[in-house]
Length: 341
Image (cartoon, rainbow, N blue to C red; front, side, top):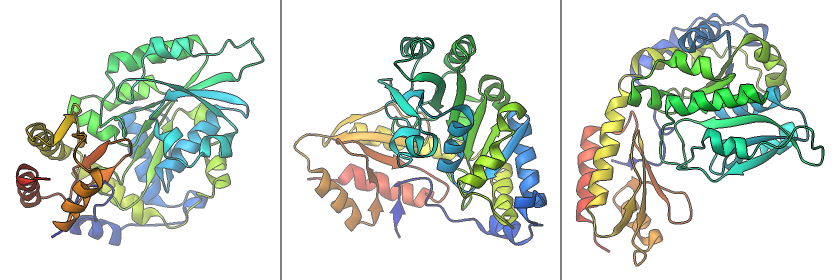
């Protein structure tokens, strides 16, 4: 038995999901004739109370399309220093949109309205890039699954409106925030101009992300997706997996959160662990004591068929998910408790 806690992207489709895929009605999505894709897009637009949605093969492409929709070359976006759009999208911000990033030293991947306000370039000062977009991430990846408060997001929304800035949410794991905090997803639709959501993180679909927004900003989304190479044909098979996941795997995220918190509590008791960051959702971030070899620790876990991630600079990550069973959980907790260097 392999216990793979590197990411919530390692899951396999459940048998009912495979059956939903098999029975999907499909068409050519480039012509917008795939009924299952259309149904998924409509479902998510309604879910967030927004006008329009568009299915993408990946979350990175959905984020990159959003940035392109909001900006012009030589402009600048504001984001946290740990933002996925800066750290994990291959430099696409500059390559695809010709945009630079003003990075803020936030708290666990989250930035405040006051921090953003301090970093908006004066629009009439032509020596600096024109600030045109703010990108938030909820939950934060490198920040350990941290969740923004609705109040802070609303304050950022008001600031963006005041300064004529776009506001995009990288909501790859927004489902975890919604479940953890019992939130109404329509609040997000009222706050953000665009939202990207991922169906293969947490929800367990094999692929797919969706960009959701209001009609004015989304009117060129199809064109941008085409330019990025994201036009797909009978992709309703994968959209069916997404619909099944939304209908059946959303509430169960509570189980992932519970297991993550139990792992965090177990780690906090171990003498070889220096620090465990607050655990709100399904991501656990922790650090080893300075006399413990990270390389040896990871190899020792691997010998027991346990995989976790190193994020560099001593930051280790564990992500719970759909395929992490109760049996695996008990075995993992026992391994952590009995580990010795």
